[in-house]
Structures are given as structure tokens and as C-alpha cells.
Length: 208
Image (cartoon, rainbow, N blue to C red; front, side):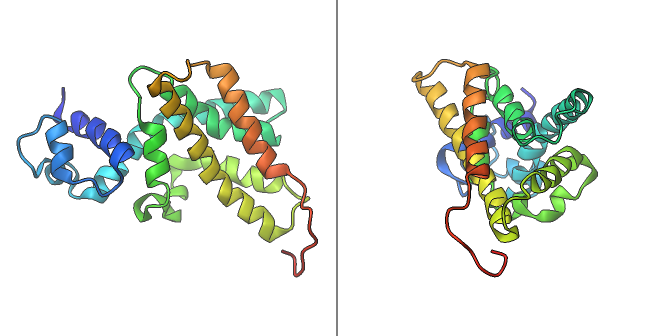
């Protein structure tokens, strides 16, 4: 295998299993590299490795989401909450149900708050247009919520989505569940939509 690809695979798996601070020498060893500095050679740093792992998958996800946006625009459903959530979650689930991708859901759960990944400037890039469009439309699709509560739910949605996908991925690996992309995806989307749209039960003040 190409050494760089092997490091990406090993990094994705070990970070998912052991956390973002897993020793880089362990990643190099898992990738079949005798040189403990292999990660630095190919990616400059731990942050560079994280970015490369995310970008490798995200480029495919971005293309998939752009295709879904075009499809749902044609169908007239591209502004509906459930459709918007589906465009975020379904491509990740589609990806992890392939034989070649076994740890990406758990990797995302681990690194989602890491400064290298969470930097808002990443979302502003031209290569993240689909996610940016979906996020903007989700905000507009929740006018019934006070602004602060809406922001809170949209921020929490990412945490919930990655946690649900990671748990699903663990269940697949453990053999507790058999992949059923259609039914499993629908259930995860329903849970996320319910979290976003549940009515505010207590009065708030100050636009909260």
C-alpha cells in the first residue's frame, strides 16, 4: 500500500480507538513504517495528519451533498428540515457502510472539537460550500425558536449526529447490528430532527 494512504488509514483507526493524542510512533508502526517520524515526514505534524484524514473523506462527502442538493432542489424539498438533516447525515452513513471505511464515524466523534477541525475558517472555504448551504438553510428552517435557543440546538446537532453515527459504527463492528442503510439512516435522521424541532416548554427572556 502507498505509505501515505497507510498512514491515513492507521491514523483514522487509532485516533478513533484511542483518542487524538495517540502516539504518532504507534500510528507509524500500525501503518507498517519503521521510521517513527513517518507522520512528520508526510504530514508535518499531528494537526496535518488530522486535516488530511478529514479532507480525504470530506471531499467525497462534499461531492455527494452537492449532488443531493441538486436533486432535492429539483424535487422542491431542499429547504425542509428533514431533507437538510438527511443531506448531512446520510452520506456519512453511506460511507461507513462500505467495507473499506470502518472507523470514520468514531474518528469524527473524537476530533470534532479539535481546534484544527473546528476552526470556523474551514467552513468558509470553497470546498465546503454544500455544508455551508445546508447549515444556513437549517438556521432559516427553525424560525419558531428564539435565536439563542436555535444556535444552541444547531451546535448540539453536530455532537448528537456524530455520537449516533459512532454508536452505529460500533454496533456494526461488534456484530450487534447488521447494516440496513435505509432503515438505520431514517431512524438516525428522525432522532436528530426531533432534537431540533421539539417545542420550547419554558418561557425565556431576552430573546433566549
